[in-house]
Length: 370
Image 1 (cartoon, rainbow, N blue to C red):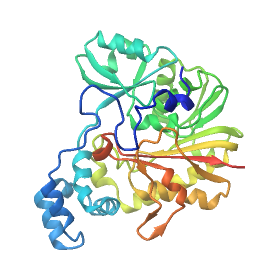
Image 2 (cartoon, helix red, strand yellow):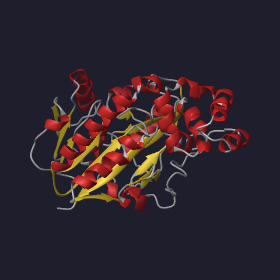
Image 3 (tube, rainbow, N blue to C red):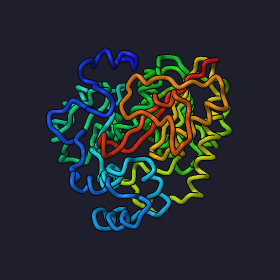
Image 4 (tube, rainbow, N blue to C red):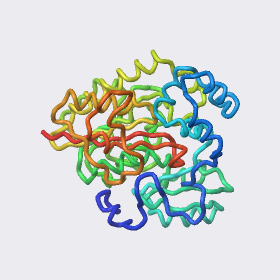
């Protein structure tokens, strides 16, 4: 199996600059931008977002904005240039292309592509990983084929593959996945470590543990210990890697959960941010010197992303942002609303549905220097 460190060398010429192409496919669709009107964007760009003309324009040209609560719409408008707000909101309503990750513990990608093609599945490989595929069309339920049930692949969003691919995994490591359910990233870690070392897969939600165990078993993972406790209390000694796919507002996956648009209030997100900061501090504290923590969310809000990572950097002098080997996405914010963050946050990556045709996502690689 190809190691993470060699992926870029393997794929020279197929992985382009961040935010451009994500996969080498034979037809358009997976990486195309939305077809929003240039005239509408020019009109939007000329308005003052604090004035009444802004609201009138939104109601007339983007009724979807009226489906958001006032707080969340305000937060989204703070992130994007005016011309992008409508594009983000429109594209957030659309389902992203289906992607699967081949379980290289049991089968190679070529073999699974052949098997699924024989069942009438039209799919192609993602260029920046040796295990991802995008599904264009299928005459059978992708989550119920014999190959799926045998553990040859799992359904996994393209963006959510990126944190694990950037963890510099190798055989024999000790890894903690602090918020592991339903297990897509845990089983990805096991595959890249070739079922060696130890993975502690933890989740605080007891109801989700059954699904986590089921996926671990189905995918043939043998190096995993499942835990059910508050991630802030996990203590298994010093470890080599920590993955913190933190609980978040879900503002990057509104197409999967439209209730986010009305249910995410200021107080709820503030509570979420407090938890994220406590989890990242604890996770970083578990690392050996030279260890790596990957922080990720399916949120686009700065409060849950750059602000949380910047908090860690301010509290822990031994923490350092490292460059991602597979660096798909836009640069992280180095400043926001007049507040300056650590300049190294430029190396964090942001993924947007209207730019990359993937779920909204954030990931940052953090090294423990000593």
